[in-house]
Picture (cartoon, each protein chain N blue to C red):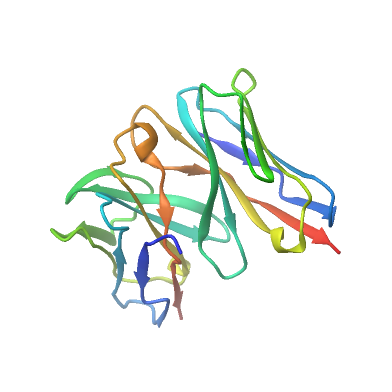
Amino acid sequence: GEDVEQSLFLSVREGDSSVINCTYTDSSSTYLYWYKQEPGAGLQLLTYIFSNMDMKQDQRLTVLLNKKDKHLSLRIADTQTGDSAIYFCAEISDTGRRALTFGSGTRLQVQP
Amino acid sequence: DSGVTQTPKHLITATGQRVTLRCSPRSGDLSVYWYQQSLDQGLQFLIHYYNGEERAKGNILERFSAQQFPDLHSELNLSSLELGDSALYFCASSVRGLGGDQETQYFGPGTRLLVL
């Protein structure tokens, strides 16, 4: 079945780059997403990448996809305290149901 | 603001009771999805509706049901509530949800349910 895994916690200093990693098992994944959840808030879509792409850049965010290894990463440049949140990786498959499968989330803590 | 609205924001009820959560999708979106977020299970897909029709079911209990109305808003009904049903319930919408770029799901702020 589908499975998405993430490390649970990452701590960085303000101004540094953060890299959040994700692995998935479904080889038919078509789109892979990054969502951000701040305390007590909903899920904010940050960015997504189509499975035929290797990289996508959007301002401070860079998404890298290694389809062979089923590895996805999110790099946040110049990390700010406002970036402190839980980041969820999610995938959607081209087969079967059209629902997101989420990782467990990575809590990013940015130290001033 | 994603454009997806959910009501109520918070709900406190007792075991055995029944509640209804409501979701209005973004203007123009035909697909509505329901997800449950709990501490032990994480974010889990419950059910997907497209233009009024049920499209897929995930880990939805038989005590739970949903529907999507002609105006495309959706309701999630939770009955015979148990303590373990306490969670954050999210609704998401997408343009079509049938493939391609129109899969992208936008989430509402959630309804926090506490069963005492």
